[in-house]
Length: 380
Image 1 (cartoon, rainbow, N blue to C red):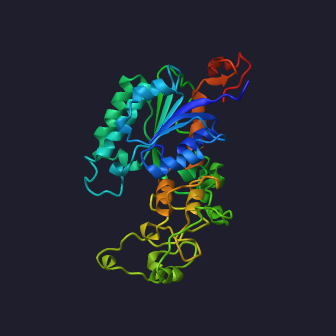
Image 2 (cartoon, helix red, strand yellow):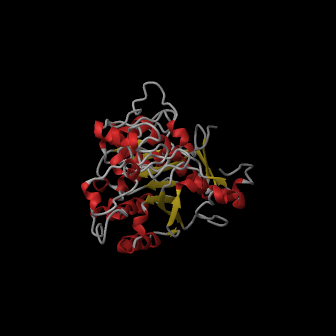
Image 3 (spheres, one colour):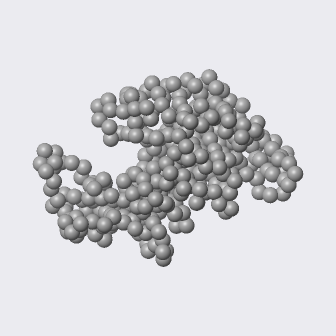
């Protein structure tokens, strides 16, 4: 008898942060869809391995060109999909957009493409991640339609939850929305969503009994020799001088004395060209996390931006996970990912809803959680 594996699929999979979280939670990935060539290559190189999920098929195609029904038949063939993951592109929902920008962005509709896969795969559970901006009033029609389709398709969908990664032990301030749906034939008795936070601000830790937020200090320890992602942007002499005037461990653009013409009309984003404070959770790693002109992404003490490896560590990727396509592509893949350890906390919590599936050499044996005790088994 081999170890059991739940089976999952991942849409808009990126470099594979959500998938790696699932693998580390005991799942086998049947297939993943990711249109970006560099991200798809990274996924294959790191997830589709004998040590992780060797049988996963990666489709590096526009998801709208794929048949959800066809992939369901090919990869599950009538068997249960336990978990469907995914984070549809969030640019249309981005909180950086002003006024009504993004309302008619066609990328918003990709959450409905996601649901087409839910409808065809009929997973026991689906978990979708997106930016908090998707809950803004201007995007309400997209979210309402998503919930309508879920109800019509036999799913109970929990209220969208805006969660902060640092409240779950991730060394980063990162707020994202998670939408959990459960097939109506799956018992949710005793299940609570979301999982309770494990960490909080140091000021509240003693009062609440929770652990204090984790700092990002460990991200800046030396990288392994020949780490292809131990690289940072090369800055011109002017910027190096700016960084040299910026106080260590949290200094900002204002501290550096750097004033651009645009700053004469407004204050600008104060975090731009700021240093990361290693004693605190890091700022949100974005798709431009290796570029100091896009946020607080300067090394705590050195006069350059953070490396791709340092950003990946903040996103809790292991050091053996390598990103292809060069520095800019790596930064995009890292910043767009679900932090691995954060995803694992959520998926481990969701596993309590799933039946226990084991594989013998000859057949598959499925034991529901409700009957596991009588079978002298313990549900994962």
